Image 1: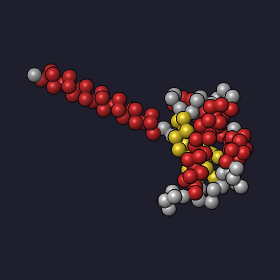
Image 2: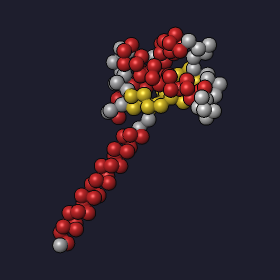
Image 3: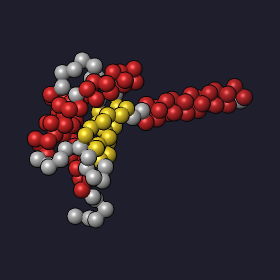
Image 4: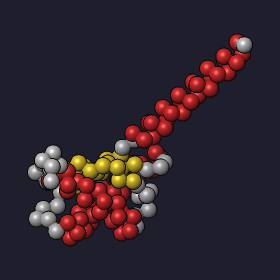
Length: 124
């Protein structure tokens, strides 16, 4: 195993995979709007894990974050059983709006290109 792929990185990858499945199959909270787990960052001492998620509708982000943080203990217990680790990291959920901002930037760029094409067409 390469030295740059630390234990915390391996654990983060496994947590990401397991959390996605647990949230999809086990959580019934109506506040949770089908989040996508984008990334998990585990501290070096393996005591905490920041879980970054995204949702399709930005309006659902805050309710989803509250629902996931409320279910963090339940998810942590299930992870502990699946991971069979001595210590399961404490989970905290954070909304990541990078993809939403990216889509907005794409829309802005497309609108500027379309406006430039219209202007160049008017000048001819």
